[in-house]
Length: 292
Ligand code: 5RP
Image (cartoon, helix red, strand yellow):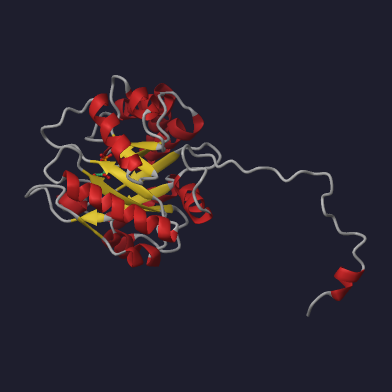
């Protein structure tokens, strides 16, 4: 029943007279003008307290089949989820193995179409209704700059971003690396910028030893890095550290976590480097301690 007393006897109400309403600046680069739903979903990928992200990538099966470490997602991946801010996976893996009660962000692999047995990146995108049904936080689309399917993959991103803006779901451009492409800052700066200009709200790319800060600064939206092939744990933590300290907003890491000698320890060490500013030495010490 309506509380008429509250309206009549209003002398105790606090209207905060004299206290200006604070402006809310959103914490992520290039995201201030996005709609509320977009920002809310981005806050499930990037931790609002640090502005950074630990994304656990295990979408490899969509092009590589049962990748080492991912043969049994229920056994290898589900125990790692509590230590990540978000997971990156296909809709098949999400529905089959990820507990629906988990409270992490979801980066859905939103494009697919070919495997490593043929030519990569000849892809189409998923139906937006499925992304909505699964309550995803961002949609990841492969973008192959300079590759055979450049136009098609950019169109996939454009269409995804169109749908994303319509329904408040951010898009992530994933920069594919063709076999003939130089993996240098010049290339990744171009690829990352093309993704952002075409509507991506997040860009996933690779760390470059030289001039990575130029890749970051030339991209108007947050960049997360892929881990790439398995490295020694200390080297993988150094990669995270350098990327974060040179401006990356997070890591979207797969093989260097789930192929580690101790994946549960490794993801916690990665998390400490990303969110707690641990040095690679401190992170490696943590990895060793947790592995005892
Ligand atoms: C492939 C991807 C993978 O998710 C990505 O490469 C992350 O995994 P890894 O750290 O093993 O490279 O986006 O396109």
